[in-house]
Image (cartoon, rainbow, N blue to C red; front, side, top):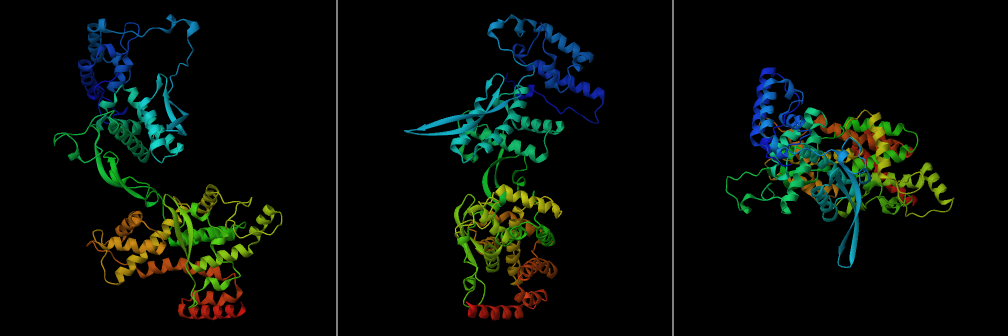
Length: 568
């Protein structure tokens, strides 16, 4: 089944701007190359006739072309007559004993994925996991099956992610089997043909095609690391190989900093056919602008049911940078009760910044920094929201509740499901007309604002921050400290995008304009104003904030705090 790639000349079905004569000459040259190198015993034959479809697939034409084109028909006929003695005819099924044959459908299986339970024994301990396994009409796909087991047991991959990888490999293996190319003959050229065929068939967009190539690249790296292939794909620096300096790996690689989901970055050997580091999930989503955030808030507040809860959830994402999975972890006991109003203020009458413990994605226990005004508003929601109280009453049968439950409840009174929360806000984003964005992008908005703020500080201090400056790390560390994050490298893609937008022709980073800063501040002012209108005694404070008389607002807050302390 395995021929050298030179004998498997595959082209896209369509060849625009090529005359019929030129196309005929091209097919003749390809046929001659195949006839010179292929083994007649490996060419399928039926009724003493070599398969025209087998040749047509490799030439890139239709089977009928081999019979209608005189030159192709003559060349193939001469070769067939010369090699007829080496022909191996496929036996007819009619010769089989019908009592020992299971009837199969005429259409061959294109590869099915079965979820197979596999038990791994380590000493006296056993571990059972579900391994997605690829099966063809002629049996198990051993390489893909072993790779899937490796991903399931050796890597932190769930069954669903492994199955998605197997689906991608199935597309490649289907193409590879279709053209009879063995693993050791798969090269960059063959992968390029694979890409071109997918594009010509319109089966996958550019990102999907790159994802498939990346999956195949990782698969071959595994095969090389486990000795199934030798020096076939680069997985470490070239100096560590016992190969000549001019040795070219059949499948090329480059060492790159890859940016994955949510700005997370890591280094790995990647394919040179996908654009390397240019392909990442970062940047495929839209970060809402300040105007869009304000409009989104208006949309959320016009939704009658649970509007206060939904606006709170939006603000937790926007002003703390929390993920949805982190917001649903918030407990009543994380914040002081609303009747203990003094607990929300420092000794100098400024609002406290709270730190709430949460489980971060892939990081374990961490602290989330919460602005005091957001904490105060959340405590008020817990204490006085009628819809929340009704949910608790239905759940507990009217019994007195404790303060250890989640802040944001489902309709049944349990922890809010992250998928449900994402679905709710998907509706809000759609209604607000914000495309390519969801609630997760509010976290990106928060991170962007923090970095913009740090860049403004340095720019105002006369410090130049350019893409090659050592101040980059300082900016990221400062932003991380402000948002309670411990990994500056994860914010690098956000900084890169901001630097590109603010870079001048001479390579310097200019500070944001006054209009841009005021627009960013407008979100905070409008949100703070919205929070205060619920309290009649604080309407004056809302007016001062709207007029940007911040000194007077701070004085009024101090007076109100002193009055509240006397009442407690």
